[in-house]
Length: 144
Image (cartoon, one colour):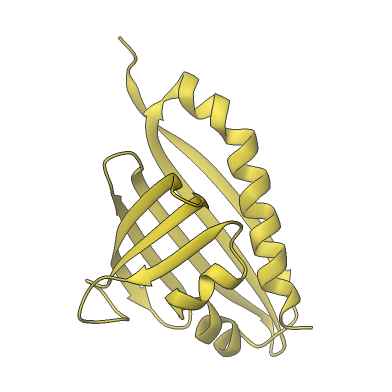
């Protein structure tokens, strides 16, 4: 039997935009599908920002893919948003943190704690890392 463990994945990048502008874009959940690879995102709760907001993200092609459901557990604009993944397949937590480096430069730190057997995580980690890295680079490019 495989033992479920917490597995960490993190990516940081610098964005040439003020922190509030970056926050305003990242917090538009439905727009995330414009820069996240093969992903459609929608809000499933009555509220669209703040603690308790529920979001779903389907990543895949056509009907083949994975549904990731999550709920916001921490909301401190324009600095931090934490979520808990509540789906049947994807479990764990996610965080994005914004740090103002100068008035026009923001560092974006994205991280996930994925609950999965270590062997499974090690198999999916390279693809997950590359996919998120490409997605975040696409997000940063919209500020050029």
